[in-house]
Image 1 (cartoon, rainbow, N blue to C red):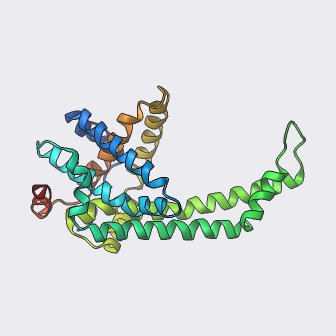
Image 2: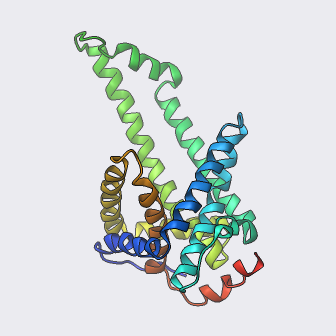
Image 3: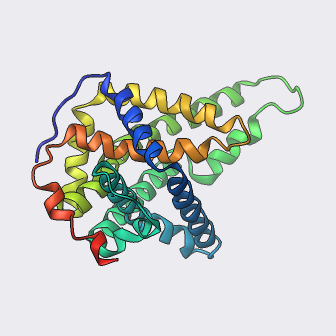
Length: 254
């Protein structure tokens, strides 16, 4: 499989097609994500290991959502069982994707902290910030600029990691790829489609900002739509020979 390059306007089309999948059964989409959010919250309260488990299982649940999108595209119904479908198909590789992403994030954040002088550097920035109308000092400017550069450097390295992660779960579950192979392919796909992803990112940001205005209720629509848009982008960028044949038996086991 090799990703193809598409026009910038496809970034909008991915979101529109994602909304089309959401519109086929909006109630079950909302229920699925509410259950998922409850699971995340319950795991997060477990000291130390809870957030780690969330990171490792993120691609597993993502795979379930991708299978739900596939079945909706076929005209089939989706159900609660789709949320857990990733636990029945290439689970080890999906968890590996989560582990690689977690390790990469830790390394990047850790390196950023070291470049910023560790916790002391960040503490110095806040200590030198003007408080209660105090005048801006030279020390304030130096500390703030230094930390800003570190933050921008961290974002610069996070972006390639996010590109490698973006399509990895769907490539593992749909195309039976190994975790590292899927992440490499995902990175190439994003790199070849910078323009549509820029369009996609801007529209997604606007959509999220609009969704949080009515007490955050709009997120019940925005999050499923943007999740489904990952699948529609995958369908657009990657060739689809034999994909459905490889994954057809997954939901029949439930």
